[in-house]
Length: 274
Ligand code: FAD
Image 1 (tube, rainbow, N blue to C red):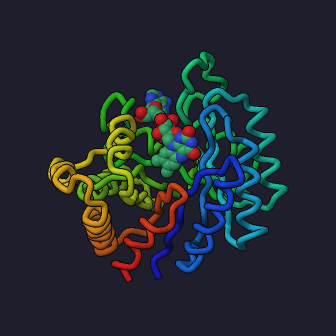
Image 2: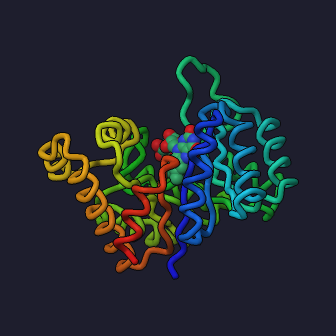
Image 3: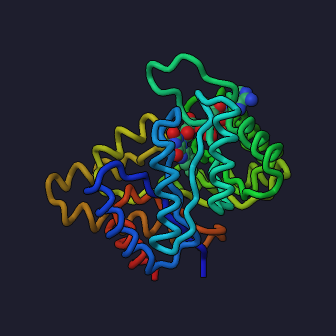
C-alpha cells in the first residue's frame, strides 16, 4: 500500500481541540504513516506544536511529526526544543526555514533550512529522520528555478533524508522537478504535498503568496459554480483525485495531504482513490 501522511496545525482552544480529535478519529481509518504538525512562524506555536505531537501518540496512537522553523530563533533555542522532542521519543522532524513574521527584524542565527539541517545532524547525529520542503513550481523568493533546485540539493547534502513538496495542481511540474534533482545526483524520496480544495477563495489568496499555481481553467470552473457548494465539492474532489491518480501511476513514493484539520475534503479524495 502506498504510504500516506497528513498535516495538521496545532489547535489553540478547546473547540479546535475537539474538532481535531474528531478529524483524527476519521483519518486514522486510512492508517497514515505519520501526522505532521505545523509550527508557527518565529516559534509562535512552540508549546502548542509540542503538546499536539505528544497527544498524537498518547491519545491517538499515531506517530506525531513536528515541523520546526529556524528563522528568528537562536541555535540554543532550537537545540533545546529538539532535545525535548528527542526525550519525547520523536524520530522524525520536518526542518524548515519559515518566513519572518511581520515586525520581526532579526532573522536569527540560521538563515536557511540547510543551516537547520546541518545543526540537527551536528547535534543529534542520525537520531532524527529529517524531511525538508521542495518546490516543484519554485519557491517565490528563489533567484530562479535552477537556483532553487540547487538549494534543494544543498539541504540533502546537509543531511536531509526525504522531502515533502509544496502543493501543486500541475503534475508535470512535480515530475520535471524530480527528474531535475535526480539528474543532479539527488536520490532521496520526494513526496508530493496534496492540498484538497475546500475554501476556494482562501486557497487562491494563499496560493499567490506561496507560489503555487491554480490553473486558469480550474479558476473559471469554480467561478461558474457560484454558490453551488455541492458542485464545488464534487468538482474539487474529482480534480485532486485525478491529480493523485496521475502521481501514483508516475511512481510517487507516497502522498502527504494538507488537511487544515478537516477530514471530509481528504476523505472525499481518498474515497475516489480506493
Ligand atoms: P529554504 O530551503 O531555506 O529556502 C527559502 C528560500 O531561500 C528559497 O527561495 C531558496 O531558494 C533560498 N535559499 C536557500 N538557501 C539559500 C542560499 N544558501 N543562498 C541563497 N538562497 C538560498 N512554514 C511555517 O512557518 N511553519 C510550518 O510548519 C511550515 N510547514 C511547511 C511544510 C511544507 C511541506 C512546506 C513545503 C512548507 C512549509 N512551510 C511552513 C512554509 C515554509 O516555511 C516557507 O515556504 C519558507 O518560505 C521557506 O522555507 P524552506 O524550508 O523551504 O526554506
